[in-house]
Length: 102
Image (cartoon, rainbow, N blue to C red):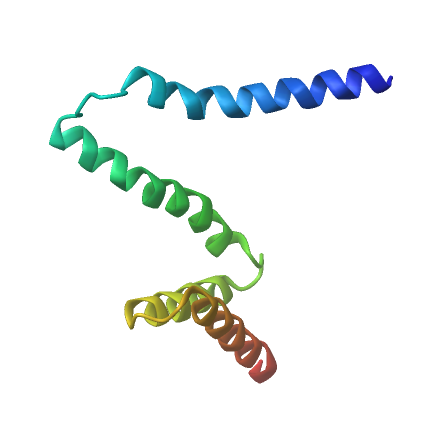
């Protein structure tokens, strides 16, 4: 049983490490075209949006405005240039106030 767990940890480490290592090995000393660089720079934002949007819509079954208000508060704080901690705390405060008023 213990050896299975150890092999599972080793396997998870490999499948995590290999995709991160391969680009460094394959593209070492090569310059990617500007279009590909632009696409790759936007991948984290697209992924983050794909992860966050469903959570905004489905955070509360009965009240869609709860998620929309939290996202709007976070967006406004981020747009104004606030620190990430301030964005999160501002969104939490807005939702706490919204919950208190309802």
